[in-house]
Length: 306
View 1 (tube, rainbow, N blue to C red):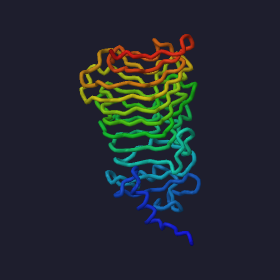
View 2: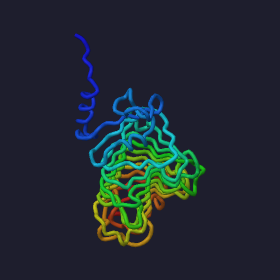
View 3: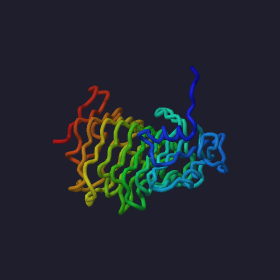
View 4: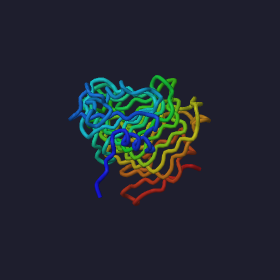
């Protein structure tokens, strides 16, 4: 029996039926090795060379997707997606992503629109300029930003800059932020930095936070005493590994706002002292059944939720 082949229209229709692509959206193809921004971008053999060109061609709100071939994509200006776009590595490997987006610029990604999803991408700082690898909801409150199977990596020497994912605007916030199965490492500052208005309805789960600097925290919350934007964040099943004097989860000052309540449970902290794995001064009822490993006793069940 012969082998049948999908035509491009059928292939796009099939991919559009996948859970991470909109059946109403268009798929754009990017290939840094074989593509050209002079191509149509509408088929693998007509791929663009840059992710920025795919963003330019996409239609906001429609649910367009960008399929990115393996390779390193060096950028000199921050990527600024349109709403409801999905960016997916053509080959997803969470431990060693096949797509690297790198640059020595202030932000590699600025996300101020709702509904975007990023799958299987590595965001890499290639110099000391990078303040944030991904800057989310800095100028507008947004909904539904999702990062899955991604990696955020900086420079070990960059201790004055280098935030992995920043979700902190003075008057803005991301609702429903999802960070799942991601890896944060070699970052000089906080790896996931949360602003004063919090991360309502967020799910931060199954991630790995490797602390390289005594100035860093795995997850750092700004003073959320006045946050009134939502409730129900969940931080669970994450692993925090410390090679310095950093803090796994840090709450900065104040008392947790009435509408910022969340649950922080079943997280694991290795090479932290029980007193430095987290600072819960403003989240005294959120930490439930977290486990802190230490060489003295073999580990401590840190149930501070009472």
